[in-house]
Image (cartoon, rainbow, N blue to C red):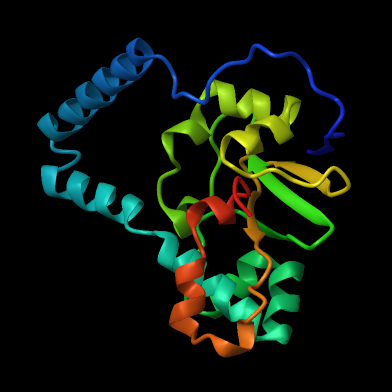
Length: 209
C-alpha cells in the first residue's frame, strides 16, 4: 500500500507519542518466549548455544550493510538502476544475503520524500538492518505514519517543504522497503568510507532526510 499525505490535511492537535507497546504487553510476550525456549531446551530440541547463536545472527546485520548499499548506488549509476529495478537481486549481487521475499528500494529526490512503515505488525528489512527500533513497532508510529506522516516526521526534526511529495510505503510479509537517500552535494569529493558514514538507519527508513 502506498499513500500520499497533503501537508494541509492535519487531523487534530492531540496525538499519541511515538512509544513502544505497553510494558505489560511486552513483559507478557517475553515470559511466553522464555517459557517456550526453556521447554525446547529441556526436551533436547534446542540447546542454549544454538539459541545464543540464532539471536546473534538475527541482531548482527546493522547500518553498515545499508550504508554500503547506498554508497555503491551513489557512485555507480548502473548499480543504482539495478537496485531500483530489483532490490533483492542487486543487494545480493554485492554479497549481502537477503532473507526477505523482496526488497523494494525507493529513491528520495528533491521533489519526493519516502517514509516506511508497517501498519499490520513490524515488517522491517531485518536481514539488512537488524532489529527495528522500538518506536518503529509501536502502535502509535504504525498508525500515525499513515494518518499524519508530516507531523510524525516533524517530531524527528524532518520538516518537509509544502510542495514536496510525501509517499508512505506500507511493508508486509512479502515485501520490505528501503529508502535510497539523496547523495551529498560534494559526492565526488568523498571517499567510500566517508559516504557510508553519512548513511543512518533513520535515513534508510525515511524518518530523517
